[in-house]
Length: 330
Image (cartoon, rainbow, N blue to C red; front, side, top):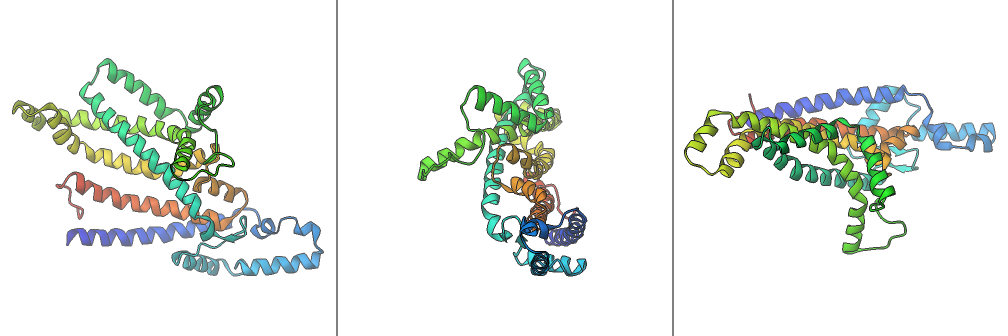
C-alpha cells in the first residue's frame, strides 16, 4: 500500500512538472527570432507576386495554427501531443510523427549499446581497483579514468576520427551503413555495427571513467565495514564477500550516478550524432533549431523532459531492488 501511494504521489509530481516545463519550453521557442512560415515557404517570396505570396503566407500560417493567440496555440499543441500528434514539420513538410521513428530508433540503439559497453567494463574495473587499492594497477586506472572523464567528448571524437578513420582507416567516419549498400540479414547487422564502433567508443569513454570511479569509491567504503571483516573471518570465499556482500551494498550510490548518467547520455549524444552524422534525435534537434522547425524541436525537448522525470522514479525503485531496507514511502 505504501509503494502504491508513493508511486501515485510521484506520478502527480511528474505530471505537474511536465506541464510547467512544457509551458516554459513553449514560451522560450515562441520568443526566438525567425518566422517558421517564411522558412517553410523558402524562395516563394522572391518568385511570387506580393499579393499571391501574402495569400499563401496567410493560408499556411492558418493551417499551422499560428494565427491563434499564444495560449490557444499552447493548448492545441499540448492536446495534440498527449494524443500522439506532435505537429507539422516545416522542414520536412510532413507530420512529425511520420519522421521521428527512424531517428529515435537510431538514438536508442546507439545509447543502449553504449550503456552495455560501459557497464561490462566499468563495474568489474571499479571492483577490481577497489580490491587492489593503491596498487600500480589501481593508480594507472585512476589516471586513465581521470583523463577520460575530463576531456570533452567532441575532443575525444576528433581524436578517434583522426586515429581510427584517417591515420589507420579501420572504421567509417560517418553514417549508419555503407553508401549504396543493399546488404540484408547478418551482413546488414555487421555493417551497422561497424559504423557504430566510433560513436559508441567516444560516448563510452567518459561513462567508463565516471562510473569506474564511483564504483571504486563505493566499494572501498563498504570493504571497510565490520560485517565484511566478519564475513572474511568466518572463512567465506573472497569472491563471495566481494560480489555478494560488498558489491550489493555499494550499489546505492552507484544506482544514483548511473541513472543520471543514462539520462545525460541521451542528451549528450546530440554532439556525437552531429560529429558522426548519425541520423538520430540529436541531429534532428540540431537541424530543427537551425531551421526554426519548432514542432520537431519541442517534440525532442519534451522527450528529454519525460526521460528525466521517469529517471527519477526508476532510480527510487532501483534503490528498493538493490537494498530491500529502503522504503519508497520514506
